[in-house]
Length: 171
Image (cartoon, rainbow, N blue to C red):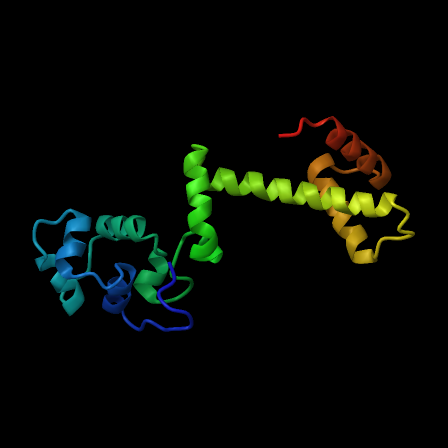
């Protein structure tokens, strides 16, 4: 979770407040399963720190990076999809929900489809008489074919991939 771009959060209490999106102590206590907000107030006053178990719970609930929470160093979140932003993430989460898939599975499947499509695009470019692919596209094709067809001769992998694409059922 991004607190704010390029903003330093100098101390533990401020970072803790930020990961809970500046919620009131009572709301933080509720999320953590406390009946009283007294322990939370003590954390913000710097009188005490949460126990190790509570720190782990905070990291799980807020998806914050525990090292960042304690030290202010490194990235503030552990979410592998933080780079997507809301515009992409919310629709992908909804699609995953509709397909009864985890977001990670959906993202991997979509990434593989996109890489496969790029591989087909480069093969078509090569087969349509483009005398020579630029070196960077040739290397990209080689790497993509390695992903899908393993190591070996580029021409053999390209032919094997083309056969695979032709025989694959379409959705």
